Length: 367
Ligand SMILES: NC(=O)c1ccc[n+]([C@@H]2O[C@H](COP(=O)([O-])OP(=O)(O)OC[C@H]3O[C@@H](n4cnc5c(N)ncnc54)[C@H](O)[C@@H]3O)[C@@H](O)[C@H]2O)c1
Image: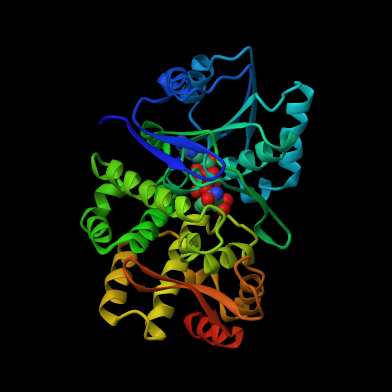
């Protein structure tokens, strides 16, 4: 497969997403081709990435000073303490704005490192090398960075575009099946937002994509990245249109928060459940036709997810889920803002619902 390059233009920064295989081994050349020079470089990695890729990256990076930190990727570590830890290392090693920080990990490391780089001396160079499917198709693109706090997920953060994203597909081979499904959640979301043809491609090739088979996985990643590019270029700061990308996420974040970001349910799995809720709710409200609802539902039912919603959540969880949905960033009033589906490629971003109606829906869908 050839290397693909997607260029993103935003008001603050233009940058590229380089997608292909065997890219880590060429990282020095890729940085140079993208005019990224720096004296010092901090690499923040995830503990679970195979050592051979880490060694390769360290070997190939040209900097006068290379500093490394390893973090255990968990929602519990996605907090201020980790940001302070990164800043401390940057200060101790006398980094400045012209130096670079590289995130080498999944969405958790990327969100943390992006936020740390955006706030260090009001912004330094930031390169994202995503190592999970979810990060390659979604979180590494578009500049949303942030951490969690006790009030909920990603509530502290910034919009800070990376200077470069390098997605090497070889690195996905070590991902557990559960993590591949997580990334797939965002691929599925993108196809519903984009158009029916993209969804049909996934429906036809689901099993091959989940096994990371070529060229199905490449095509799926590139389609998702292109969709994200188009959305981000239209509305970088999520004033309006970018909200489409939150399809399924209002439910998902509430589920994750209710379980205290437990490993029982990870982000992508929560997103799949959230998409299911969003389309079911759209159908119940007569916004989505029964036929389209069934097509999406059948597809979701083919994804073999470990967590079963009926085992994770009971009726007694409804109030907690509702509280988290109320504190969602997208709400402007007492009503809850939901992202609903009218059709493939037709997403409603501002469906205001009275919390009591949502409570009824959640109570009826849980045991
Ligand atoms: N910024 C955005 O636009 C955006 C979009 C979507 C999601 N997110 C955020 O992304 C996070 C989820 O990202 P994620 O699913 O990548 O989770 P993650 O970063 O926790 O990675 C998932 C798991 O895979 C492991 N891992 C990472 N790379 C690996 C590799 N190559 N081989 C083996 N194991 C590997 C990690 O250690 C972790 O256990 C959430 O916090 C979510 O809020 C952000």
